Image (cartoon, rainbow, N blue to C red; front, side, top):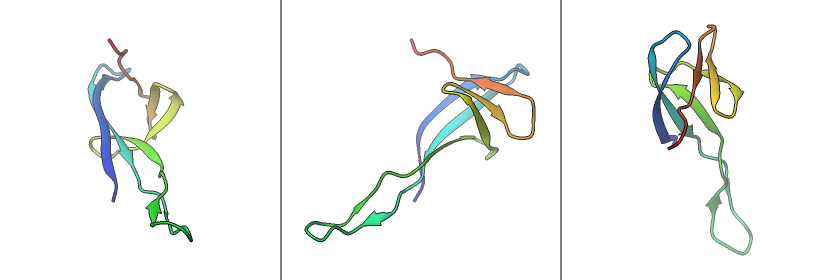
Length: 77
């Protein structure tokens, strides 16, 4: 089951404020011969709160899919 592990607001190049969610998707479950079953780390994906996809531009900057709008994560304080 996917779940949100981080959520924050950022201002886009169009001046609007967007909520961005970092989703963790589960990885496959493994069953080692000599131990209990465990789940491997899955993939992570940044999405806008309305479900639109973001394209990675750099580690802290994204572009909204099918637009020219760029969004940067605010600096940590």
